[in-house]
Length: 378
Image 1: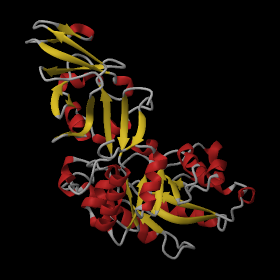
Image 2 (image 1 turned 90 degrees about the vertical axis):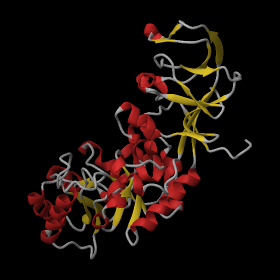
Image 3 (image 1 turned 180 degrees about the vertical axis):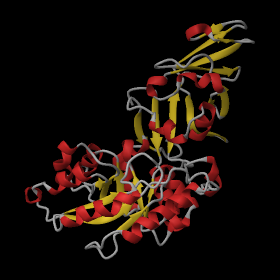
């Protein structure tokens, strides 16, 4: 390892989480969302582990993400979650990806492809309906007409799925989810017939999968839950069986003794009230540790105990107050994960920073090597 900072990815946890979700949503299937490099966990490894555990398909945001999986030999269905630049639609066929559609020009661009050049007879598409998220999707009233345009391009195009996305599924008492599902059902009732006897229907993200049985349909698009992170505090009680898959670790690179009154880091914004030992840890905000984590009570684990981050987190390094206990250069520091009887979760960082666990793990940069979780004793 070229530096004393790394992330460990527990693929047993990913497989476990997929199995937990499969049991929870059965008879619906699970498709694993592996966009954003598997939410920072490594898309290729996550995809393989999820499929081994019984996921039936994968979801990505970008053509490049799907192409990376194909180059790695992943042969499962891969759904693009939104329309991509029309100039790039040939790459969708090239990599045998399933496009999501919600505008006529995009449907026409797909229909104009020379599918024979990619050894394809047809291209399956999924129609995205905006029932209230307000991000992308065809308006419910326009969905039947767009579905008919897809049908008119048969057999080159086939409407193989219909989807929507839930805006507040993690807030269980919010009526918006029920309203969205009612709008989705209204669309499904008036869509023109498709060549597919039972097109795939999907609406549920992780929170929808866990908390809203009526949203499960043909399959659920499980993202953050397969990484062992709760989609939101409103569904924390439904996530108890999930296991976090990422831990973020480093080693002490420098130690110094400081006196009471010493100030530290940029802006000298922390002043020590007592003599203590400060450990420098070679990981910083360029690696995904938010600069202001120290302001909100951020801690790390050293020797199985919590130690406060002191001073502004810098680009490549941070400092921790390790007190008077014996600490040596090279000792392991845990930023996210477990050490001894203590654990710091990604959700803890999120709560301190006023954000969500998704942003924390996605923010761990590519400067940090991902490694399989080590066995005890390694």
